[in-house]
Image 1: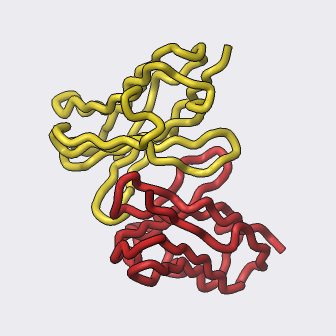
Image 2: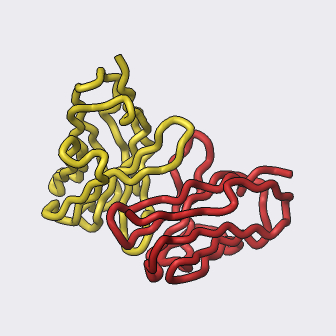
Length: 107
Length: 118
């Protein structure tokens, strides 16, 4: 089955920092990647689809990039409400699979 | 307002059955592929199953294939997950989600908790 690895597993950052999270697929999946933010006790929220398309209502400080096997989620200027766990999803092959998550914590 | 509301989660013994429901309001369920995603306590997200717009194409993760059945009622805007032969490792919050093209999984329910324990 397709594996999605994600790094780092956690990071500490300050408000205003630029943060980049990476996901790597075990084989070429084109642009079939989504990114999600999840806060404790809440359902995930879709931030990015098709690797680089911003979901409606999501702030422009979030951006996605990459294609093939390597993908990134970047937060250009971290805000207090961005402290959360982030997951990538590969939507190309069965079984669909999520990365293990990156927890973004306050430094 | 677009909303997905899951129900049916409960405490059940190993080997038991449950049926989860997901009711959609504010949009037509028939417009979307739909998925069930679960999250065990303190763990990450796991895709469980999906179904195409008319329910003729269903897919499952290996660990639930043959035990779980996804279905939909587009007339009444409902999605279901029939869960049989439940195992302790099926314990999780189960979410229904609209699973659009290339990770466009925009609409999520609030989740329903399934606990499998003796």
